[in-house]
Image (cartoon, rainbow, N blue to C red; front, side, top):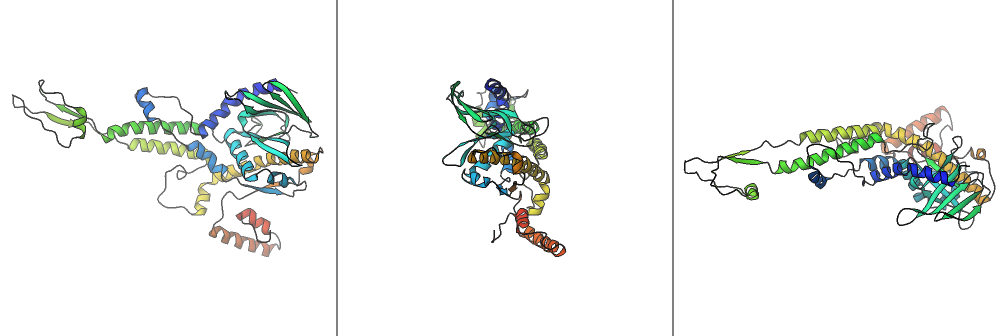
Length: 407
């Protein structure tokens, strides 16, 4: 066992990375000013705000809708249904996509139903078992004071949870669960990063930063585009200085000849074009879309011809694959939550292998339209004609998301 001091240091090591992703998602991160032509005092007036990173997360999170557990031999659906599932699952999915993982804190609630609380990755960490995806030891900050310092902490180990108030041991609550009551919900784990990978990648942050710089330059250039710079040559040295604001907004200016009969000559500098900025912004959008599996339509570059549902599915093939991968990795975490919750509810140390028949079911990533329903109906009819009883109402619901009248 590593101990709580080791876990505190581990959390402090990764907290900046997680907070960076949350700032990017909340559109509050201030990028470093780069550039050699625009003065800082002018650039700060035209700070750009862009929500592409938030769009990358929400476009996937909004499609990941958890339905229920199938073959629920231990009645874990009841536990989730008593813990506001509409809020719980959406909160866990969104937090996992932003920070690569979140944690579910399990505790005894009112009656026999355990209480489930989602804790973001900046407030919890642990030592993970790469085989089961459960923790061998966990640590979470349950409350922070006004200055952001931990005021209530929890140390999770096998058979008990220790609580610390203002850094000092407060009390301990024992249980009969074989694992710590802190479960990671991980997005895209692998052997190198067992705690997963964030949906907000470094490449995605670069393309957003590049687009923000382009918008700032375009905004400043637009001022000169709206009011082109003008000049006057040949004015006598004895003439009164020309008021620049009056010269800018006046529809007509009057100039008289000097004693030698010479008159001033008016001119205007070439107006800068806005086209290069539009092309730059579209280049950044194309790079970001390729990185996240989105399309230019998703980022505000609307095409002339509206797409059908099938065309949208085809253009979002990478997003669909990312969604299926996220479903597989998140399902394991939710099943682990149900497993430990059932152990705590029944006060009995079940084996993890006893839950192998229980499977997580998700709604389809893309909602079915009339055309899809027609195609699915024809396909199911032909399959059942070839192999009677091959596809049932459950198969149709998995394909379309529509619940039958008899279910």
